[in-house]
Image 1 (cartoon, one colour):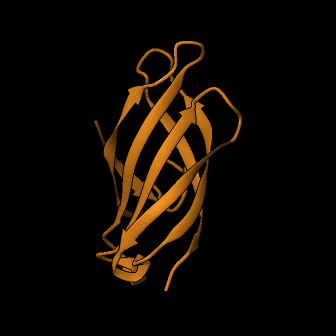
Image 2 (tube, rainbow, N blue to C red):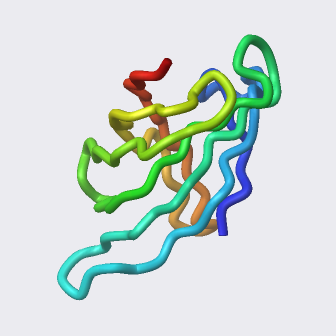
Amino acid sequence: MIDDPLTDGPEMSPKMVGRAHGFYALASQVEIGLLMSMNFAFTEGKYNGSIITVLGRNTVFSKVREMPVIGGSGLFQFARSYVQARTLTFDQKTGDAIVEYTCYVLHY
């Protein structure tokens, strides 16, 4: 399950702008590939109350991963496009990671 802070930067005390909610499941027998279903739920600023929905395959050890944006709500109604994910840090002992998601979104 995913219920993580959504921030505007990777620093130790970045501004929290929402939460990332969703789930992932192992989806490959060859490499570490996840099926991810995730909502970026914004709780601050211009996008407060809006959501971007991502659904796709995440090959976690690839430097850059692309996953489709399949929709949204609020200011992101009819959203389509993709996100790029980059792992910035990963702690093997705790399993904690900081992942940067860059969203390229077309919406009405």
